[in-house]
Length: 212
Image (cartoon, rainbow, N blue to C red; front, side):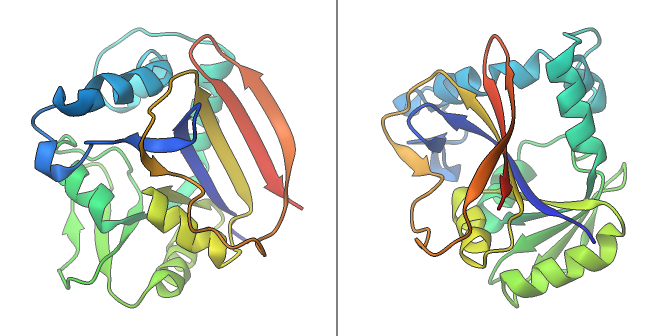
């Protein structure tokens, strides 16, 4: 059965996104310095050969354990789930060939026909809630896994449903001092997680936790 996992970047003080990173200021990365903060947190992935080639942003890049980890994570994904805010930010910034190449289920209150992109990505807009989105994702993922892509609110919903089986966090040594925290609004009754793997990189520490 498909596993449900989270794979994200995180600041040292626990934020997934810095303050000011919103549609209102998407064209102004200098607003509250959100562009520099986000870039610092995600610097590790921008250097990896697999990322650069997979997204067609250039050739070359770093190879080694972090690149191998990125590749294995990407290749295990059979479906993605995300929130409306993440989709709206990506809709104006992703290339025509969106980076997912799987079915993507977008949690929203707005009905919309599926949006198919070159390269194998189709966005499906789900108004029936997170459990229904997960049911559809399981059906389409086959024997591959389901990534809860974000943002923070969507990850929190699935943590509170107690269906997240693995947490993969790239913890970067940067401080945001504000923004959207990963673990706000999470019920104390969710399952406990144990450390499964730690990989040190020059720009982030890659942590994997599995549900006990």
